[in-house]
Amino acid sequence: MPIAFAGSRIDRADHIRSDPAAIEALHAEGRLLRMEGLDPVMTEEGDLAWVSVADVPVEAELIFLGIDPDRDGRGCFVQVPAGSPDGMLFAGPRSWQAMSVLPPEELALYGAARALVNWHSRHRFCAVSGHPTRLDKGGWQRTCTDPACKAEHFPRTDPVTIMLVEHQRQVLLGRQPRFPAGRYSTLAGFVEPGETIEEAVAREVFEEAGVRVRDVTYVASQPWPFPSSLMIGCHAYADDGAITIDRTELDDARWFTRDDVAEAIDAANEGGMGKAFGAPPTTAIANVLMRWWLDRG
Image (cartoon, rainbow, N blue to C red; front, side):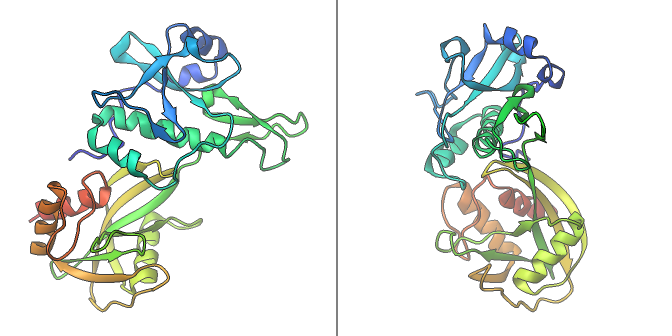
């Protein structure tokens, strides 16, 4: 089933990133993705807006997004703002609008651009020496400008487990304080150093809801550029339905039946709220996990 922010048709052309002359040659016919802070600029037709790279000042930092096979191999770029970009780390109204109207391949391209722009704007100085960094490898690296340091820094991706926990044909869902009223979703949490995905699933579910899980399996993943996560969708079983909520993490957690989930998903497809709870939007992998579970029968 389709997953938002996945499916870009752009060739990232890793072999070009280390060749400044090749990247420079792509500037002549290259396209620049327009962004305002971390938000996309869209056309009246609901597509991403582009301008010519030739219209950009020569001193601008340009990230090479890749080559567009649908436009005769033209290079695609995005500019790193001179200052910190305006925008939200979480998805704001304009980002949700983009998710609802952009074609999948354009949404995937925007997601990559947003994550990269955000990373570059927050890594202008070396974490080792404190000296300024410069853009390298077409924007897929920053390098310390101190000759005695030369530390290399790379765009980060933060792995997050997001899991559908099942017990007696019901699923465990929770709600965070920032969720809209009535909205519930699958539990989620960052993978910590020194643990596997399976261990992260078990730890997070027990920490947040006091539920022990087993038989963790992978379902699907989703790039989520708010700011730079990779959502790793999993399924697990629980042998005991008793819940102990960590109130610092969740407002509530409870078990929902298959009928509850099916009705909530149908309502979410129409932009509404279910009777038992409000499901995550169709652009969230939590929604994908719920639909996957329903399809299993």
